[in-house]
Image 1 (tube, rainbow, N blue to C red):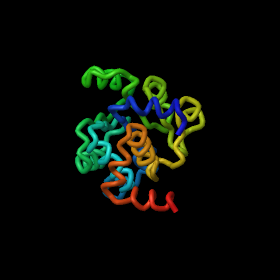
Image 2: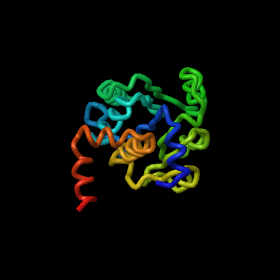
Image 3: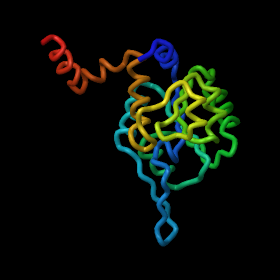
Image 4: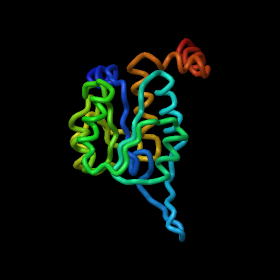
Length: 185
């Protein structure tokens, strides 16, 4: 991990996520009754839970309104959900005030032009691999993964690694012992 990226990640206390194209692959499936369906990656969800266990807050900030998002947020115990956000930057400013944070304490993952004002403002900005090219030009980091396919998990792990929490997580799940044994061989 590059030194400047690591320094930015050390300061993160809050991760804000867009939904369509970040937490999902951006597709919206509608059934014959008009009910909306979305696909979420379970590993992304586990990354979110890991952050929360280490007192890093997670919020959702999306331009659309969807019951599916409410259900997923409840499932992940994400209490701050802002839907129907036409002006994401305005809501971002309210979030900062609410939590008494500065922009450098916040990471944001986006994929489309509506995310650009927030991406420009935060301490650590991320575009998913399949984000628009114009968005990728605005960020500190481009995920190796597409939206809804591991991008959120990648960033959760990066934050935890930069903040020195990853060894504890690895020890808890018994993965560091195996990694360390391989290195000694």
